[in-house]
Length: 254
Image (cartoon, rainbow, N blue to C red):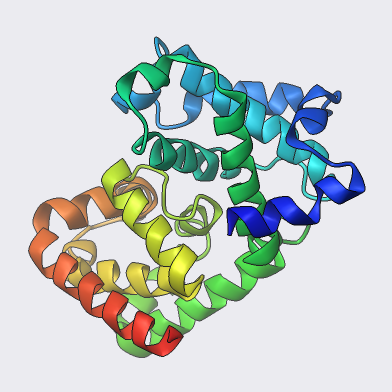
């Protein structure tokens, strides 16, 4: 994956270093969002300035690489998870070093996800991929969870509460161990895994969601607490469902 993405661009004179050195029109927006990326996770605490700088540099380079998309909120969580994921393979001493080669590897994986996996269409004007995936999710809820669908429809909770799960590849307000697993599955079998995981979580939490009395309770729960609540209350059942999904998806992929 990394080699294939790298091979295509340097021949045209495009390198990570050259992109990083260019002026970026999105610099202010990127810099503003950096502290908001996994703010409560130790790995990205502000005293770990190198990790935040890795994040800012990669986003800066990608905004120059793909000027049609530039930078959109949500991309910071995707890149943050890639940085965390790749740091797991390194020793603790490397956490405190600004390593351009490390950044370059993260950048080219991001290019693969955005270009080869088509995820840039989630962030483009009119968000065509986001519209498509939300429609799939809504159809799944209507088919499998009719009571939830009625509740969501009456309160206009789709897409208001569920869009960010696609914009951030389910990384927003998710434990990084879970985000890493989602990234593995996404890279292996593709975008439908996000729809499937959301349907499984909504199914497991259906009674808890229906018990909420008003939209003031529903909105923050669905938007910010769904993943954490599912993992706390239904971890074993959810893990089994995810494992079944992985096996099914891998079988279909092969």
